Length: 261
Image (cartoon, rainbow, N blue to C red; front, side, top):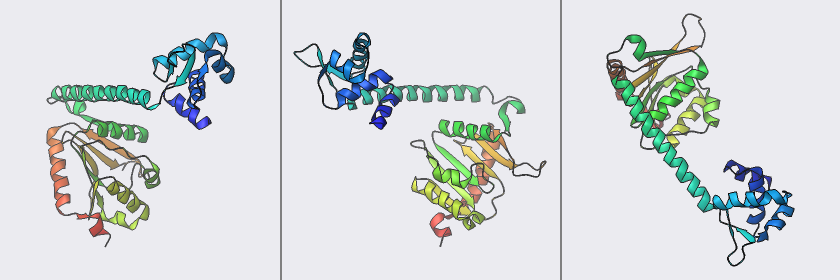
C-alpha cells in the first residue's frame, strides 16, 4: 500500500491528495466526512483536498448525490500529465535546436577559444556528453578504447537512453574483446540497436555528434595517470577530419558477432 501511495506522490499528488485518492481507489464511494475520518484529515481541510483531486480528474462526485465521491481511473489523468510533459519536452527540443543553430551560425568565424572547449573534471565530461547526446538528431559515431570514463560495471547497471531516430555506431579497439565486462557492455548496446564493431589499433577515443561536434578524450600525459581530458570542437573542418578518420576505421572493422567467433 505504501508503494501505491508513493507512486501517487510521484504523479504530483500531495500527501493529503494521495491519502484520499488511495481511499477511493479501493472501490469505495464515500462522503467528505467519511473521507476525513478514513484518512485522518481535518474536516475543514478535506473539501479543499477533494476539490484539487476533482480538478486533476482523479475523482468525481457520484451522479445524483453531490456529497458522495468516487475514484476515476488513473489512466486519463496520468495520460493528460504525460501529454503535458511531452509537449514541454518537444518545446525544449525545438528551443535547443534553434538556439544551438544560432550558436553555431554565430561562431563559424570565431576564434579558437570560442569553438574549442577543454574539460578536465570527470563529472563535467559526463555531463557534456549527456548534453551532446540529447541534442543529437541524426547520428552519433564513436571510436572507443580503454580507459573508459564510465566503468563497465556502471554501464551494465545504468539505464540506457537513446534518442529516437538517431543512428548509433560504436567501434571498439579489438583489445577490448579480452575483457568480459567490456564485451558485456558491447552486447548490451547492440541489444538496444547500437551498431557495435571492432577494429585493430584504435589511435584515439572520440565521438562525433551529427557531423557538427566532435568530443575527443585524451589521456593526461602530464600527470602520467588515467585522468582524462576532453576536447570538444565545434568546427566543421575538424569535424570533417575526424569523420574521415572514423570512416577509415569503419571500413577496416568487423561486426561484434564476427569478432567473437
